[in-house]
Structure formats: C-alpha cells, structure tokens
Image 1 (cartoon, helix red, strand yellow):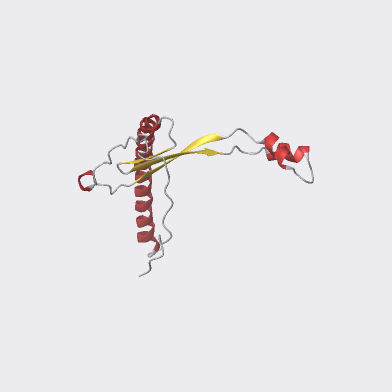
Image 2 (spheres, helix red, strand yellow):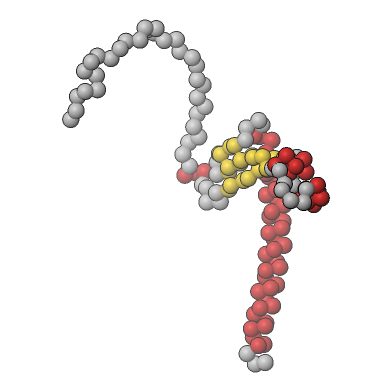
Length: 138
C-alpha cells in the first residue's frame, strides 16, 4: 500500500488532466468544424483547394451495403448487381489538412492568376526539320 498511494495519486491527477484536455479538445474541435463550414462554400464547384496553409479536398465516398439484406436475398454466391441493389447512395466527404506551423510573414507571395488566351499561329505551314537535325552529339 505504501508504493500504491503515490502512484494512485499521480494517476488520478493525470486522469483529471486528461478529462480537462478532452473538454478543451471538444470545444476546439467544434470551433474548427465551424470554420470548416465557412471555408467549404468558398470551394464552389471545385473539389480541391490549397492556400495559406489549409488544404481542402472533397471526394465521393461509396455508400454502405446492407449485408443483412444481401444475405437474405442470396445465401451462396453474391453477384455485384445484388450488392448494388442493397448499397446506399454515395455521399461527399471532405478532408482538411492544416499546417499549424504555417507563417504568412515567411510565406512566398501568392501566385497571380494566369489568364490563358488563344494566340493565332504566325505561320500555318509546318517545316520539316533538316536531315541533320538531332544528329550532333557531344
């Protein structure tokens, strides 16, 4: 009992600290989710964005399969079309990757948008390369 008492006290203190940090984590996670909900509409029709230390990727997640329904329908071989009939609809998922060490003051300047325009060719005729083209070796 002599050795147990200080260890038990230390463990209780750690458990108390864990509970306190979990409560803080719950609040921070809720705040992060709220910020993500504000960022998500900025994607518009795009599925991927990466700016200022925050990456957002939207992707489709296949629906779940009602295996009990499949098992009741077929007991031996289960063809893919049967699985498809019991599969729920797909859904969209989003992944956020945040670089907590990102420092805007040390970051490279944001790239300027490039507007690509079609340029008319100056000469429509294609010239064949000479017979010596590409034959010179160093």
